[in-house]
Amino acid sequence: MSQALLVLAFFAVSLPLSARLGGYLQYRDIVAAKNYCERLVPLLEEHRRRRGSYPMRIEELQPAPPPPPRHLRHGDYYRSNGQQFDFFVVNNGSFLEYYTFDSTRREWKTWT
Image 1 (cartoon, rainbow, N blue to C red):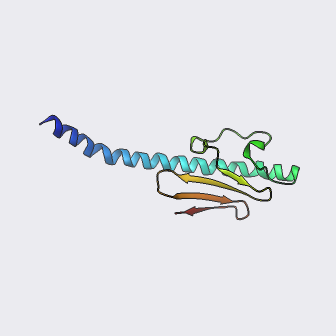
Image 2: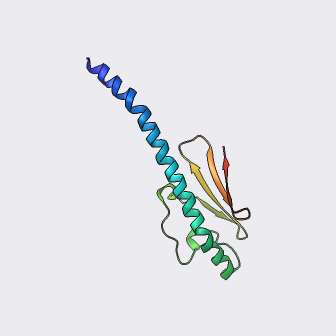
Image 3: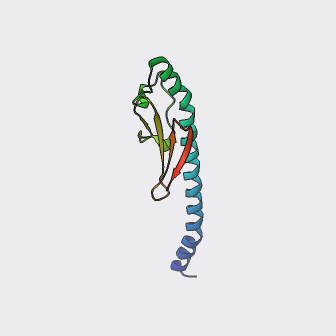
């Protein structure tokens, strides 16, 4: 068997496997990001109870929350106007798919 045929066979077998693994890892990262955001909700509510409004930036929370999972390390996952807040999680494995959590509805919405 020629070397070129072996390389072609390797790619033919490994490409679907790596795509499937990548999809699984992306899904796992999104679930971890959403769970992390949901764990912040009680801290945000406590902040609002003590100070009268939600923090404008997540870094203003005291005590400081645990570090975010790797999917959220870009730092642009929380938005607030003081009266309500949103979490924003992007699916990097999909074109223009993202998830938002609205503090008024308390649920995730998928946008595609």
